[in-house]
Image (tube, rainbow, N blue to C red; front, side, top):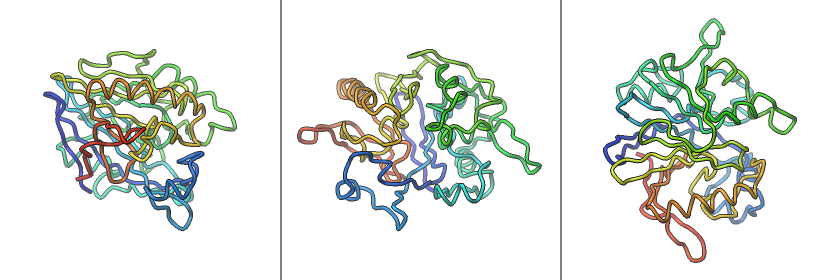
Length: 287
């Protein structure tokens, strides 16, 4: 599977393709009518659209930093069928380990893991299930980072949130906890972007006056760039709307490269005006 590399100042970055999943198109686009969204992403016979499980690797002076970890290897065949998961690795546990290997890294080489949030398709690869059925850390020498509020929120689910927060992905992980916007490492900053879940964060990479933002689920694909195109999965869609508005103001002013975690074809691009709304300038495509 092709992977895309680029630089942000002096930081070398790699968009790692960790496989694919398929989710219901209606749920992915909320109140947007199907005749509009299917022009951008074509659904399958089960009304599901393809979504990448993309992670970001940043080669940092402090060691390799991995932002999000994909879906992992712990789920059942039934789960994989429902969500259209295709992420089995050729040589590793999943495509993510294969992608790391192509960049010359083993899981034990990763020094930092930053979770944007703890849904199964973003944090499932935090841990893995070994042949004996035991769950262990996928990156045993890494410091794992997440928002304090997100870990608490994930640990106290209700009927609406339980299907997305699966305890084996985070319950035994020794997290370093953030509280709001913070510098994780020099050149890596957490930016709270609530709405999808209350403590969702995007990650800003900064070096040499250049900036790239790993958006995660505040803008999951390039098709979600219009301000009102918001997922039905979002717990607080009006909060998402304001998160996008604030993010776009900074991105437009400072010329950020925006990186999409779930777009199957487009890794990223810069924000541009598209009539009355926003579009993508100079898209960076997979491979």
